[in-house]
Amino acid sequence: MAEGSRQNAVLGIGFVLIYQTAVVAAVQTAPVLAPFAAAGLGLDADLIGLFTATIFATALISSTGTAGIVARLGSFNGASASLAVVALGALALALAQGPGLVILGAVLIGIGYGPVNPIGSRLLNRIAVGRHRNLVFSFKQSSVAIGGAAAGFILPIIVLMSDWRKAAIATMALAIMIALLSPLIAKRLGQDGIADASIRFKLPFAPARAVLADPLQRGLAIGVFAFSMAQFGFMSIYIAMIWRETDLPPEGAAVMLSLAMTASILGRLYWGWRADTGRPRHVLSWLAWSGVGLLVLLLFIGPSWPWILIALVSAALGFGPMGWSGVLLAEVARAGEAHGGSAGVLTATAGSMVFAYLGGLFGPALLSASVLVAGSYMPGIICLILAFAVCAVVVVQGTESYEKDLTP
Image 1 (cartoon, rainbow, N blue to C red):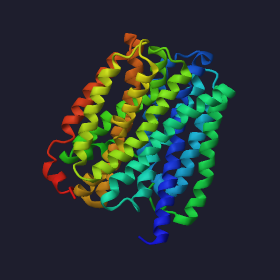
Image 2 (cartoon, rainbow, N blue to C red):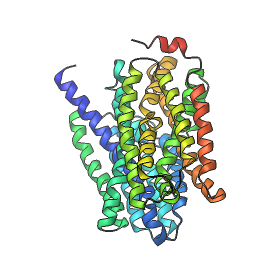
Image 3 (tube, rainbow, N blue to C red):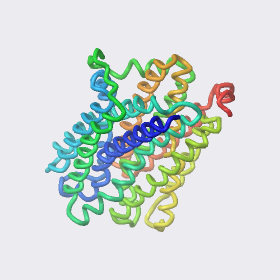
């Protein structure tokens, strides 16, 4: 690779990383601030899963509904637009006096979040080729962990220094700053807008049906759904759960989420590298089984748990099952390419994101509903355990000869 191309690749990956980090930080703003803000807003912190579910329900529609607009605007202009909408959502949270603006904030953040993965994958499609595809996609997906870790660590500090509204304003400022940076990066890498792209609104069901029709992609779709349920469910309620079930204060619970997300950064890079050595779907199966074991352990969490044990389990959750996304999305792209060439990659990615957003919708809602109905997170966690077990089995079915061809 020429020096200029290498620099452009680093610049492109770096932009995707900070862009997605800013959006994920906005998604995590309310879950992190819930213990601090809930009483003042007259809300129960355990309802925070429903906030995240609203974000993902909106993102599910936005991801395909705005695809034509993003294609016409180009990746960088699309990124600026999505960041602007996310900033408005964070502002709505900062101004909230009750549930009305909180819901509006969730809807706006969901609209801005929807196009994030299509934009990021479109930019990386110029870069992520060859045997390091899993590692590049894992690096890109580490933005989810970085955004979650940064929100869990920095926002409580802002709260302690000022108040939770200032913390929400900080999230808004970050989104605006990256939106202003986007045109500068575009001058170096070039725009990729398609002038005659149709901007007609599209529902997400057609890409999902296309994925389910292909046996090689069907298991991956189930995997995306199961991993997304667990990841976004726990990113949504983990602070509230630790605060509720243990003796840690809200700030300590936020540190545990930050620790899990930090470990997840390392996990995503390690598992991406490990998958590039061959048998990536077996790596995914192992990660799902690790999720089963760790969630079973989490069923017994209580006030008697010392903080060091909570920290170890949090780090293990981050490094293990939360390190899934780069490997799985790279496999989605590979399976789509095997099914239909470059057009198949786009179809497979769009279809898989439907299941990712459905998981992000059902996971947080399931866990919040569990504690509201049963008074405990246990029923919701058991459902996630079963989802992981199914994923661990189906993700490797019928892939023996397929993975043999991938082994260096």
